[in-house]
Image 1 (cartoon, rainbow, N blue to C red):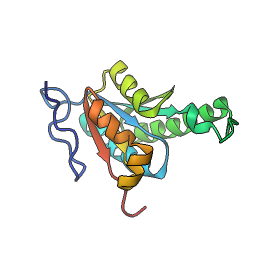
Image 2 (cartoon, rainbow, N blue to C red):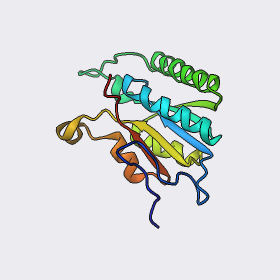
Image 3 (cartoon, one colour):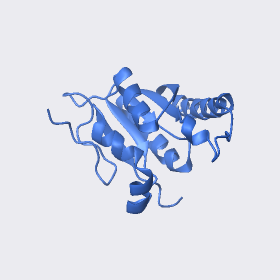
Image 4 (cartoon, rainbow, N blue to C red):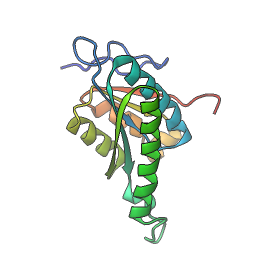
Amino acid sequence: MARPQAFSPGGAIDQPGDASGRVERIILATDLSAVSAHAADRAIALAREQGAELIVLSVVDPNGLRLPGGRFLRRMDQERARVEAGAQAIVLRARAAGARATFLVWEGDPAETILSASASERADLIILGSHERGRLGRLMLGSISTRVSEDAECQVLVVPRDPND
């Protein structure tokens, strides 16, 4: 079964959602970076326009907290509290804009966790930002947006970084 159109370079989605084109649940996968802020703006606007529920998802990657030698940059509870506060700030912004919104914080590999959460929450659309690391960066680090786009059971909108940032 072919998946619907997921991404176009201009950031537009072709016929999002179910067969009627309706989007009921949007997952905004965010790492709370400046790059993700542009994706958050797009997700909030789309949720408001579609009358969709916006679920702000942030993933705590335990491997990202480890320093060489096995020590931790931050404790897991500290990182989780930081991420929850950031996700809650996006939810408050979305609600102020007139969108229904909530947040989730999951732990694990970012791409795998985004895919699991979108399936669990029965999302119609996943929105995430792109760090646009270039060919070498994607080769060395992989691309979360590429992995999610290839494996998601729903549409994926990858929002490029704002050129003014």
